Image (cartoon, rainbow, N blue to C red):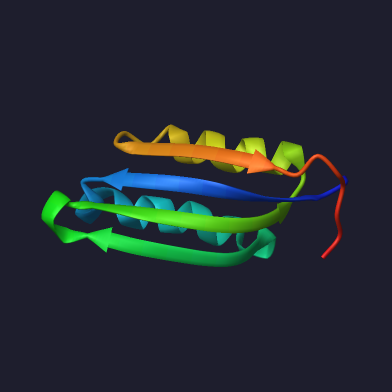
Length: 86
């Protein structure tokens, strides 16, 4: 499948409970992750993670779908219009 460059933004509420669930899923998709930046916001008990990905639309849908099923996790993504290989 053709890959596209893009990003996935993740907000994790109740991070002490949900962070390990998110990380487990991200490790399944590690081959598609080009860069990752995360910021824990201790006062709000949440975290924000931004991923730069090189991924097919099908795999991106699978990744975001699995993340979105976790209670307290919000996820949004966008992919480039042109196919890319990095």
